[in-house]
Figure (cartoon, rainbow, N blue to C red):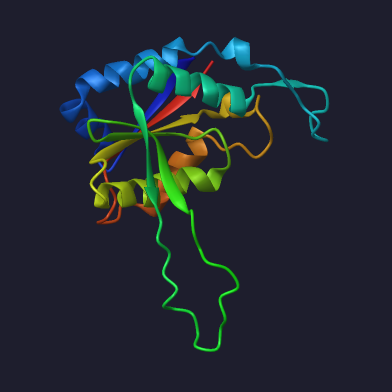
Length: 190
């Protein structure tokens, strides 16, 4: 795969380049090492593109996991969520205990967090505007990278996969909040 687009959210490009130049090289190498042609094996069953061969987000995710975790030593970070029940109304009876919930960041190394998002749009926004801030607040990261497809790649995946251009428009229109961390957004293509 190849890097096709770069966006600096809240000074993300500058922060990552200054604090983690060696890890930025690893990220670029990992992206280049994924052979996208090996992952165009999903036969579409969708009404809008029946029978068309598409890139599989599932196998692409596995390929990126191999590149980051197995080949480069990045680690996923999983944190348990202890959900509060103190806000339930007095007359509400809990039917089951809330247990086993967690949040996970795909890859972390030296306080740089990475999320790869080849799925729905809402997860891109959640990753950058909520999850990365949570993981910073918990002391696991200080800045992040979000890797997403550009539109030309998203068009060759299942419908509903979001893309870099849409994501950037929304981030620019939303603006930066005082709790946002620096995030480098990378758009990838074949």
